[in-house]
Image (cartoon, rainbow, N blue to C red; front, side, top):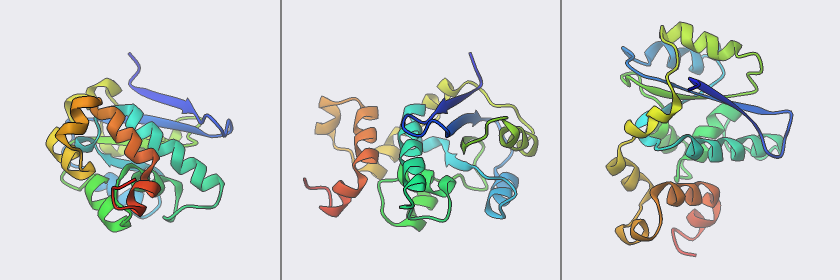
Length: 183
């Protein structure tokens, strides 16, 4: 079982998205500092807000598309992934809810165009850990937190799997938030 996954973007074949999951960390403070000062280009996602790598793939594909079409709301493609993952249109709120915190002991990392895995190697070095299989992220997800953040209802979850509801919200964020949840 691979510890990280690299996926070609479905529309932009020149772009790749690499995913990795790191657990049992002392903290995310050093890697967050490196991302914030620009020495590492990556998205650091709060693993408690992820139930499946596909959830991040949808947000990352959307972020790459927004980057390629010069339509991003944030400063770079990696912060755009985090923003796309969130149901909120408030950038600060999105970063607070979905971005890794200094005290987090696990982190889901997404990296765009790391063709030779140099950024992933740098992240591993800074964290002092190697990535673990991505399938482990499902055990880290906090269902109550996710349900609250995405405003999922019991009725909705009785008809659809949670992942489907999350992916729908990520894909249709602009439509859903424009009508404040009403279609």
